[in-house]
Structure formats: structure tokens, C-alpha cells
Length: 218
Image 1 (cartoon, one colour):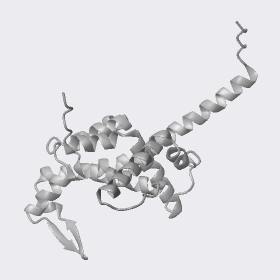
Image 2: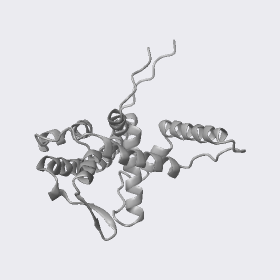
Image 3: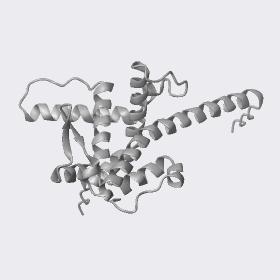
Image 4: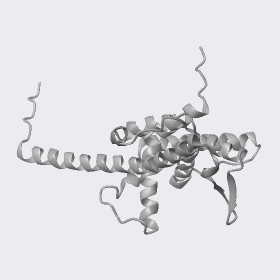
């Protein structure tokens, strides 16, 4: 029996739940922040980018991207082999997928993703009673229908006041959780690396001062 095809929203949720995607987003945002001077060096995240890009899951993503590019070239009848995707190539694809998924996912589903990353969200942040099934894409579409999209300095801007309150509140909540998603991915990775460091120090001390007796040869 063929597997049921996932809906765009189910795919979006799956993307946002991916630990690889979360870690790539977190380490990429950290590196960009340090490079452009928006944040200082964090000892717990320093080196995380190299660890994530050197991980097996990241390598598998690289190989899949290479195969896809190779197949695309062959279908187009182009001679030669594609270059192996760089870390930046892979990160670009993942970060773009995350942003598109954040636009596609419904508010209540994004809330589920967020509570799985940070349990404090469930205790401190509640969803509006209406509009939980709305996505950012749907709100923008509605805004276009009612003329709530206007040009501002050559760019399109959303005029929330022209939308029903249900759409306004859902949009604000989606923006809240969108920002929190990126921050929570970074914070969880930071805490895990910190805990791992202390665990390694503890194990090293135990091994030095309280070594376990070696098993006798059988």
C-alpha cells in the first residue's frame, strides 16, 4: 500500500521538527551574528557550526543534494559533473526551507513544534481562541483580497488594521512564534553543548580519581 502523500502543512511541520534543520539554523544564525558584529562570541556555541556541518546527517544531506543536481544536469542533457555542494549551499537550502515552512504552517501546528523545543512556551504563552488554523500565507492572501497590502517606500507592507481582529491576532502570534522558533533552536543547542561539556569534565575526573577496575581476561 502506497504511503499517504503529505500535505504542504504536514511537510512544513516535518521540516521545522527536523533536528538537523534546527541545528543548521542555530549555528548559521550564530556565525552570521558574530561576523556582522550583532553578537559577541559565545563559548558554548563557538565551534558548533563545524560540528553540525561535519555530522553524518549533514553529509547525507550534501550527498542527496549532489545526486539531485547530477540528475537535473543529465535530464537537461548537459555534459559534465556538478561540483560538490559546499556547506553554504546546504545551509542556504535548509534556511530557505525553514523560512518557507514558517510561512506555510498553521499557528496551532507551529505552537506544537515550539512546545516540543521549549516546554516553557506552553506555560507562558497561550494561543488566541480564534484563527489557530491560519497560516502566514493565508493571512497575506486574505490581506491582498481586502486591499490590506500597500506600498511603502517601494516595498509591500501589510496594513493589519484593515483585517478582521481574528486575522490580526493570529498574525501577531505567528510572528511571535516565528521569532521564538529561531531563538529557541539556538538556546537548546547552546544548553545541550554546555551540559555535554560538564558531563565530559565529570567523566574525566571520575576516570582519573575513581577508575573502574578492568575486567579480568576470560
